[in-house]
Image 1: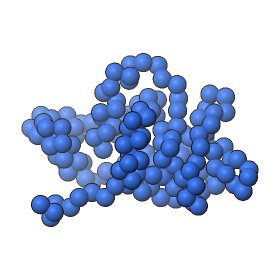
Image 2: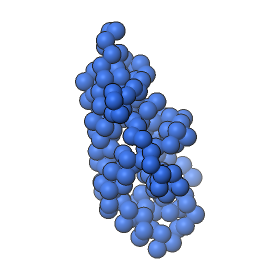
Image 3: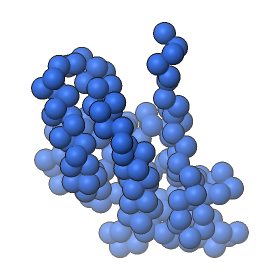
Length: 156
């Protein structure tokens, strides 16, 4: 989950950014139809087409479900995540790993910041190209999260 730290460290973090749907462009309904994003006042919503009726689902409800799913996927794998992240950043030393592990321990705070800041458009585009997508039903319940497969260590 190194992309969280990369996005949070960007200069735009210090700017005031309007609330947005975290996974805009990455959400589809259970019939594999893209889900639009619209605003009700200043609240971003995912808009699901229910046979012509446009259901507006608060984006934060869906986004929090996805973040909870991510947290569960990371649980118990913090050491592997910190090792791989440090390696990918080219900083494979004990201090970098310790810093990354500390960030993983505070993942809920990281997720709250991410909800406030959002994922930049280029980040969402990258996630989409890698195969990441969220499938929701008409009520905004996350049915599944498709993610890129992790390469196994045996492929070298």
